[in-house]
Image (cartoon, rainbow, N blue to C red; front, side, top):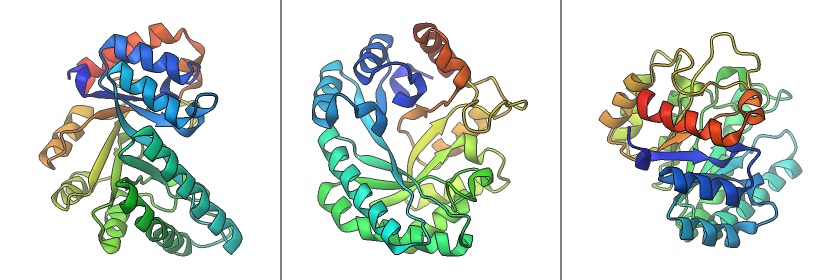
Length: 271
């Protein structure tokens, strides 16, 4: 796949400051960048937007909002307020989309957490519409159901997006979290048909992973059939960026220029 279709999440090259990542991606011929909130430290959204625009990269998304589910009402209110600040930052950054890691709490049922997630998203909708920023529900692997996200399948994310019924709410498909799902093809086509497929994230699942969070594989390094899933995504009508999002203690420790070369090679050959 051509690198102009490639977007890299700034967390992927975590050791680099945002300005350095932007310059390196542009030099490599990458088409877009998804900016993590932590990357704005020391530069701010407005300055970051100027630097990215000058580089020729496209801002694909702002990561990550959400974390709506809490047993206490005060915590839920704080989450809404934090998400509203992120919407303001996304607008300054020029990001058309915020990716939502929806949240969960082991102190309550998954059903209660899911209702709080829906309530939280609906509370953000007026501001999202005003700022013209879409919200993407990202289902996470079931290993995160206790405390990170009560939305764990694409079917659940589709159900929620359809129930909310807004053109500003859709889903993000991340292969790391969804590759195992026997209903994945059907659910990808479903969200494409409904216009809800807003983002597509790629990496790989290593069979002998050392850490469930920070040992994601480079594309082609694991067991995910990326080209097959790509065919489903494209059949669903999605022709946007393929976003490389890799958390890796191993790759964060290596020379990031060499790592970027590995990313671009893997993207061309395996995606």
